[in-house]
Length: 120
Ligand SMILES: CC(C)(COP(=O)(O)OP(=O)(O)OC[C@H]1O[C@@H](n2cnc3c(N)ncnc32)[C@H](O)[C@@H]1OP(=O)(O)O)[C@@H](O)C(=O)NCCC(=O)NCCS
Image 1: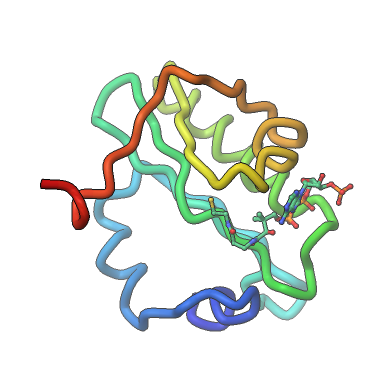
Image 2: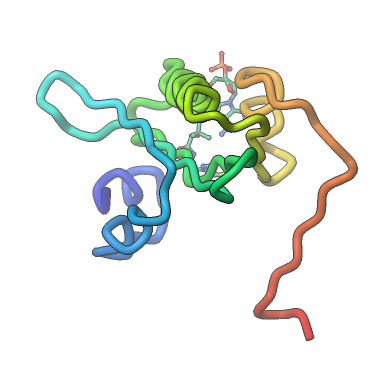
């Protein structure tokens, strides 16, 4: 996981996934022939109808080959099979071609986000 995060210029945090995993509904990985992790996405949930897609990552030199779209597709399939009705995601505007056009999320102007560290 550390290698995957660093491969796309992200800031890695050893032990991060071990802390997050117990709260996950499920996750999808993609690996190369040697078993190296090249794609990942996690699905958090509320214990009921709502699942939350988070931490989609594709290894730097494996990007733009459809891996991200495929891990998200399988994550959505798994969340539905687990009984969820809704799959949420939030992202920076420049990733709309990925989440909206490639993965099929419907954009909404009726969602919100608070950055709790900078909010009184
Ligand atoms: C976003 C990310 C997961 C996409 O993974 P990927 O395996 O390259 O995605 P795909 O190959 O399935 O891309 C499908 C389409 O989505 C769009 N797309 C993919 N990456 C994109 C990007 N970084 N910016 C804008 N559009 C993008 C393109 O239209 C692409 O089709 P094309 O290659 O024919 O042009 C990958 O760029 C990544 O790991 N980025 C760094 C981490 C990150 O920002 N994660 C998202 C957190 S919200």
